[in-house]
Length: 218
Image 1: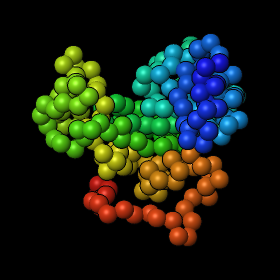
Image 2: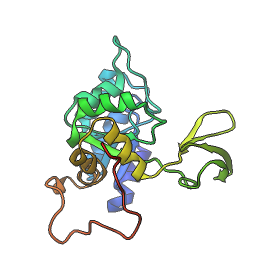
Image 3: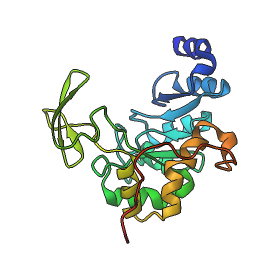
Image 4: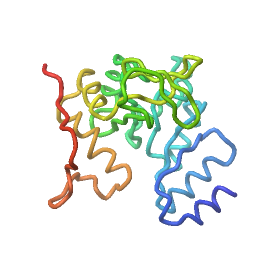
């Protein structure tokens, strides 16, 4: 009830929330949030396949950081990952730094969900792009090596790469240039604003000053 009240109080300022659909009251929260125009994403969840489908039926349309911080796939308990990959109502976020998700699994996800439902993200931390070494952010010391960020216990601690790396990772996993660019642009736009399902329109800003992204040859 408190979360529903907070959702109402936020008004149009609240655009997207993460929900674990197996939690008590989660399905009702999802349905209420969606009725208020909020995008609901399945995330940080130990949901079974059936619990995930219940969340999707209630209106969840996104899966945050697919494969990470969620129940793994098992052939007798497919879990939230399989629900997201096989349900056309769901867009799947993939952290494409080459470390959070194995390239072969990226390829599998791309083949399952296809270009319209893959959203490429970097999960970039504040120290992304600083190169190898020891960095500090949020009071935490992280070790960066070849784009992988780990804490002192060896656990992943965000990503050290930016979206140029995400583009290259998805392309190397077998996505076409068109599918790669869709995953970095139109698909995330459509998630937040379904009315933009047709993509970019005349007059849209499509480029900000910065480093040009070049896909690897071949």
